[in-house]
Every structure is written in C-alpha cells, then in structure tokens.
Length: 212
Length: 212
DNA sequence: TAGATTGTTAATCGATTAACAATC
DNA sequence: TAGATTGTTAATCGATTAACAATC
Image (cartoon, rainbow over all chains, first blue to last red; front, side):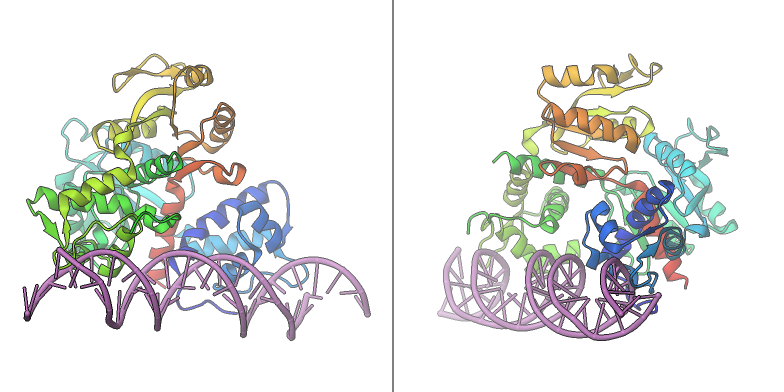
C-alpha cells in the first residue's frame, strides 16, 4: 500500500519513538523483527505498529517480519531527518543554551545556524561555534539567509512579538518553549510546543490524584 | 455532579491550560465567562469545556456562566497546586539549571528542595539558594527527607540507573527529560515525559511533509 | 508444504461534538 | 417571565485493537 493522504497527529508523534527503538535494536546487532516483538519492546500492540507503518507503505514481508536497518532508514526518510533544516535559537539563557548543545550532538533533523538574544551581556559571546547576535538583527538575518524554523526559548510576551515578526517574513515553523499558543493566531504554521509548566502541573495533578 | 472516577489523560493535560487562560482572563478584570466565550479564546468547543469541567463538578450557573476566580480556584485545587510537592533536580547542566530557575519563579505545584550532579566541578556550587550535592548523596538524602518527585535532567542511561535507585526507596513520581521510557519498566508510577528530540523530529516531519 | 507474520478490513473503544431539557 | 447558558445524554468521529485472508 502507498502512503495515506492524512497522517494523524498520534502517528506523527510515534514516529520518533519508532526511530529511537529501531536504532537501539539495530545497535544490538539484530537484523529483523516482527511487529509482535517490536510491540513488546515498545509497549504497543502489534496491530498498532502494522497500522502505523502501513499508512506510509508496506515495509514488511509476510512470514518474516521487518528488516530493521531498512525500516529504520524508511522512517528516517519519512521523518525527513536528512533535510538538516536550518534552525535559529531565539533566547540564549540556560534554556536556549541547553537546547543548542543538545541539538548539536544528537540527530534530530535540524542544524542550528544562528542564535539571538536581547541582552547586551550575551550578544557577542560564543555558543557552539556561533556568536550570539542581537535580537535587533533577527529579521535582517532571516531575510538574508534561508531559515526553516525558529526555536523560541523566550518568555511568552516576547515570543508573541517575535513570531509576528518572523511570520511576516515567511517563517512558519516553530519549536515553542513559551506558553504562547501560536496556533491560535496563525493557521498555516508547523509548531511543536514544549510547555514545561503545563507538564509539571499535569504531573502535580497525577501525584495529588494518587494520594486522594 | 460530583467528581468522576476516571479522568482521561486528555483532560489531565488540558487542566493546566484552563488554569493558564483563567489566570490571564482574571488579570484582565473580567469576572464571569460562558463556556462559549472561553472556548473561543482557547480554541476549544464549548461542549468540550463543559464536559471537562463537569467531570470534576458543576462549577457553573445556568443562564450565567462561570465565575472566573472561583473556577480558577477550583482548577488550582483539582491540579493540587497548593501541595507544593517537594522535588529534586538530578543533573545540573544547562538543562537542569534552566528548569530549576524556571520552576523557582513560576507557580507549578512543586518546590525544589535539593539538586544533584555527578560532576565534581558542579558539586558545591550554588543553584537557587541551594548547594549542588554529589549524586553519591542522592539515596541518602532521599531516605532522610520526604521527597515527592524527581526531575531527571540527565542522559537516558544515567536516568535508568537513577530511577531504579529512587524507585527502590519509594520515589514514584518523575519529570523525565531523558529518552528513557520509565513507564515500560515500572507500572505504579506517575511520570511526565519531555522528549526534546522526539518533539524536534515531529516538527521535522511536519515541515518535510508540508514541502512534499 | 507448513508455519509465521504481514497487510488490511471489521469491531471496539474512547474522546469530541451536538442537542436539549433543566434552571438560573 | 424570557433569555441565556449550564449539565448531561445521545450522536459522531477518530484512534486502537482484533481478526483473518494473503503470502512469503
């Protein structure tokens, strides 16, 4: 079967997990796996795995299973890891720094090509092999260089202004650490939100609920 | 209606958002709101809001709507924000530092009571008003002090070992920044995962998919 | 060939949306 | 009282699981 038209958000968010586990299993020197065995390892059902994979194509072989390297490469290609999309980091506090360092060392589909901060103390300092630029230079830089995505490591009020400026010059992909809900203001964008406070509060609920 | 037995994960993850928006609206000086108006602001449907809220109790008034401060307080109480659960940070690199600073300034249901690192360079340095302790002191500290939750800002191999040690002394709540899937090894725990790499990869997929 | 396991359709489950009687 | 809006039940939608024919 060929690739389905619509891929659900649930599937999109499982793709990186497939990639991660297939990488681990491949490193263990195993060359093939059945949906049942992979399901046991990943805590899914074999049905779900076959459904997920088959929304992109028939990567398995009846009676045999899936070739791990092959499947891993297929998923890498589906995610688009080899695109090495050009990303910029906005806000170079501890969060921006940790994100930059993390992205630099682990394969994730992006490469960081610039970073910006509003603080004069940080502008000109080094991060990875880059010099932190002034936020005043942001729009200029992004019009002169092709940028695929912006990683927002700034508070929500600043994020709101920054997204507006970037959207106006055509940048429509964001990794958002602020609590500003970008997708409410713009429809034709790609965004992943990492809302630390919301995660903590959900965890708080779970603990509190457990102790009732 | 009184509180339902089972609250779905989907609802649990919307609670912090309700709290966030109600706080914003309250600050704007508005005192009441209908499910319809709140839905428009939050990008939900009024049905969903009424369903969500009614799984905890009837907080509204027919013909009127919801009193904002009252509802915000109810949700704060449902999440359990006033518990101020005692959390420890494990790993005080840039990520650990940014999480610590963030948690210190924003209300989230937790307070950080200690932080640990394996690096001798970091042990003894200050973070918030705490001194970074050696990871060797972790189990000892946690047996002598009541700890509600551990925030894992370390790589997955270390996370796996650390979780085992903590689980064995009864700590069963984790905010996990590593890619180790704790819930596959332990069933009776509360966990929130923040998988930065997975989020980036999902974003990568969305961009790549958009450009097909 | 027989056994294993996929790809795919059908059934089930859960979450969202619609509808409306209750009631402020 | 009339209008508004909730609380709640019913309908729909989407995602997961089960089942099984196809086939390696």
